[in-house]
Image (cartoon, rainbow, N blue to C red; front, side, top):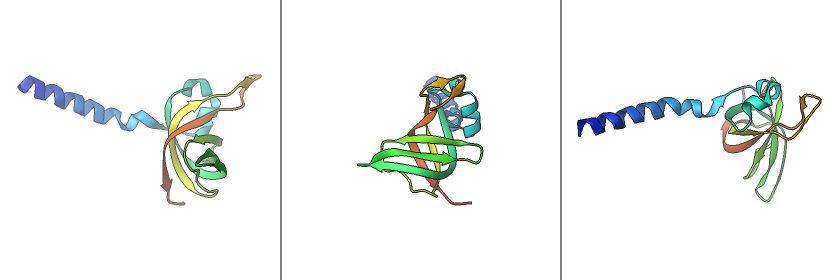
Length: 117
C-alpha cells in the first residue's frame, strides 16, 4: 500500500511540475522567426487584438504582442479590437515562399481576457 501511495505522489508531483510548461509562453517574433520549431507545439501568446472577424460564433483575430503580429483561429466568438488577451493553442503553418513564412497562425484552445496595461 505504501508503494502505491508513493507512486501516486510521484506522478502527481511530476504532473504538477509539467503543467505550467504545457503551454509555454513565447513571443510572436520567436514563432515567426522559426515557425517549423513551433509547428504543432502548445504555446501561449499575449497581446492586444488589432483586428477580428467572426461569424456565427467562430472566426479569427490578430494579436500584436509588441514583437510582431499573428492570427488566431477561434472556434468561438472572437474578442473585440483593442482587447488584451492571452491565447493558448497549437501553431499551424500555411505556406512558405522564398524562406519566408507567410501564414503561421495559432489554433486557439483557450483564451483569457487580460487587464489593459
